[in-house]
Each structure stands twice: as structure tokens, then as C-alpha cells.
Length: 128
Image (cartoon, rainbow, N blue to C red; front, side, top):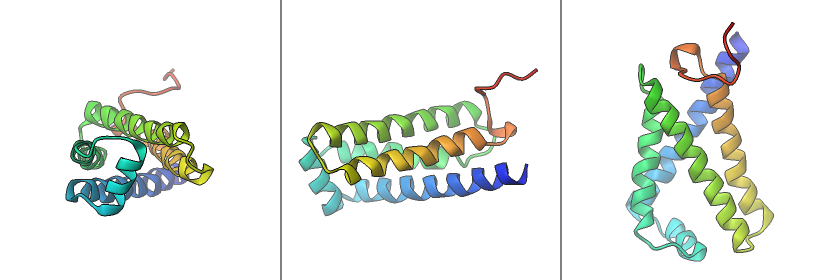
């Protein structure tokens, strides 16, 4: 039980850090992220939309007693990260640029799988 709790908090805090930092940088119009957005062929206004939802998702998975909201936040994170990996793959970016969002996606999945029952509204394994 201690390992599960440690996995949950370590992965969740890393995910929150990544999504909060990148979300804020998106909202601020960071030049590095702007260059990436243009490189991927997206319009610049997508930065503000992604920034808003990334920060919102990061906050949501930390809020107590918001099980349904957490499920949506985790789903949104997976959509964002799988979309990032696929977008990079589609334009022929190097493997490391595709692997980075997939590794972060792995942290999101670890956080979701290891979350305590009090933060869970859905489980892959049925309760008996």
C-alpha cells in the first residue's frame, strides 16, 4: 500500500509540475513554445487554449472530492500528450521529440492507475 501511495504522489506531482509549467508558458506566449507551435503547423491562438486547459487539468487532479472532474482531466491530459506525439511523428520530428510526450503520458497513466480509492470514480479492475 505504501508503494502505491508513493507511486501516486510522485507521478501526480511530476504531472502537475509539467502541466502547470507548460500551461503557464503557453499562456505567456513563450518564444520556445511559439516556435514549436509554428513548426507543428498549428495557429498561434492554440497556445492560449492549451495553456488554459493544461493549468486547469493540473489543478483538477489535486482538488479533493472532484472524482468526475479528475477523470476528465486525466482524459484531457492523455488527449493532449497523444496528440503531441502524433503531431511530431506526422511531420517527421526525431524520435526523442516523439518519446518525450509518450513518457509524460506514462506518468499520467501511473498517476491514474495508482490513485487512492477516494480519488477514483472508475477502475479497470472490478470490485468484488
